[in-house]
Amino acid sequence: MPLFNSPEPSFDAVVIGAGALGLCAAAELKRRGRRVAVIDQGGVNASAVAAGMIAPAMECAIDDLSPEAAGVLRRARALWPAFAQATGVRLYGDRAEWRGGNVAELAARMAALGFEHHFDAASARLTTREDAKVDPPRALAALAQGLTVIEARALRLAQDGPGWRVETTAGALHAEHVILATGADPALDGLPPEARAAVACITPIRGQIGLVKENLVDHVVRGPGAYVAPMGEGSVIGATMEPGERSVTPDAARCEAMLAAAWLVLGQTPRPLIIDWRAGVRGTTPDGLPMAGQVAPGLHVALGPRRNGWLLGPLVGAVVADATEGRPVAEPTLHPLRFL
Image (cartoon, rainbow, N blue to C red):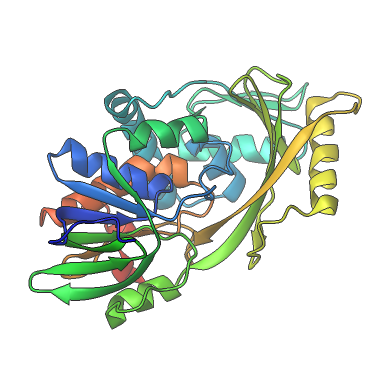
């Protein structure tokens, strides 16, 4: 039974995908007074299977990012306080810690990139107060407030005058602008060649986490092979990075290895825990930074944030919203044309 009555509804923008990038883009467009619909087939997406790290300092040091890439993550972090206040997302935690392993090397990278930090060589601990986090399920719910969210699967797109017609399992709708925030999913039918080429640049990467009802830490603690972070009333243990994997069935051996690494990071003797292991598949680009911007008239992408979707969400949302308004590209580093 079609969801829509005739005639087919029309919106200023339609976002396909309700992960962090899609909902941040939709929320930003709504903030700017646009009529927005979000199409998503429902269920748990990769943005929900995450710790919700807003962590430029740690991520830049761990991945040994260039100053240019670090600048993108730093600018994304700077947008979060105002964006969180405007959308009702709770941003919390201003302390993140790394214990053991190559801690001196990580401290040197943070120093080289200009991130605030404290390195205690005696205890092999590195602390920064430039990072924060959100709780993904709660953040997704907050971002969706006030949006028209259509639980359906997008089937195909077709150019419709100056805009686009989007066919879904619930019916069809029209939009002046369409934003593809489809994660690591294959290209939709009807995409023009340039959009199809952009989607083809995305490769899958699986991440596994474990949700624990027990409160193991009061701030993010990272180390070789694992992290432990607050999550709601409990904790989250994470996370694997498995390029090319698409299965959302948790891998018992990898989860057990991650749990063992987490106990070492915490410096605690292993004990029984009730853990809800989950797996999610996100997309990544060849250079690890997302694609955000226009790929064809009225057609935009918000794809491939690797493991930094929550950190980069407000920045990607702002870039996409600017593109729909014909503004100059604020972050050319993220423009999809770099791969096309």
